[in-house]
Image (cartoon, rainbow, N blue to C red; front, side):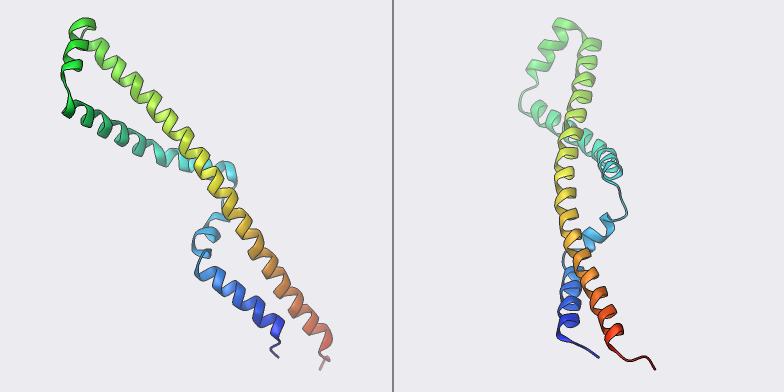
Length: 136
């Protein structure tokens, strides 16, 4: 037998699964540290790509500073400096993306708590219905 409370819980659960649930239910498989580590590993290639695009844009605008720098300190030192700045950029990029994703993780976890409360409410409604119905 359907009652209004069960229908309300089922509607909330279905609406959640259809909208936010696609993202958050996948998140339920991860611990926070695993989620942050995998996100940091995924952000390394994007950090490198971002650095290279910024470097290319700067070089397209003005290459004279690079020629002057390599003339003063040498090509190998210039390459070492570029590599060191790449490493620093990627590390900072990973730290920032990890912080952002940590915040997103907490937001998604809070919406998962709401989903879990609705599931428990639906379970209690079914249990109450079982207790109220006569055994055959």
